[in-house]
Image 1 (cartoon, rainbow, N blue to C red):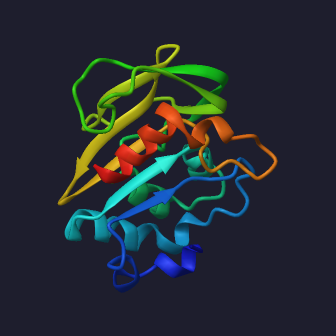
Image 2: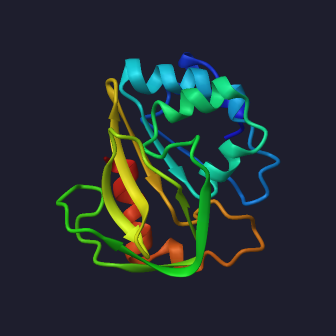
Length: 178
């Protein structure tokens, strides 16, 4: 959906979970349109939000302070700390038993895996890539937030086929279900 289609509590109430991210160009993502409503929906109505790559990067570019603050309150990534990424890297759950990573042993996230420079104090780290946090969860009021590093929302020119099956797909599905 477009940002304008989820910019009110009434519109968001049609969903259980919203997946946000970016296509790697950081130009079409307009978090300021829906961030405030999304925060209210997650914290007060128990909605869920899953941020995938390049969501952290997009929050660092052209996102007003208040919109970034609203998103930072509901996702486990520290959106004020910066970001980096790995290319074709192995993502490994850290062994904490959790519904998001249950049954996922490790996966190669191709093409990119984004990671925030730090995570929130409220975050539970569930997986890493080369020592960097690439899977984290948190409670946010009555709702929940997840940050997944793989580039599920990459632009159409990126080959994300490997993310659409197996353990990579399982990770996304379980994040949405949690």
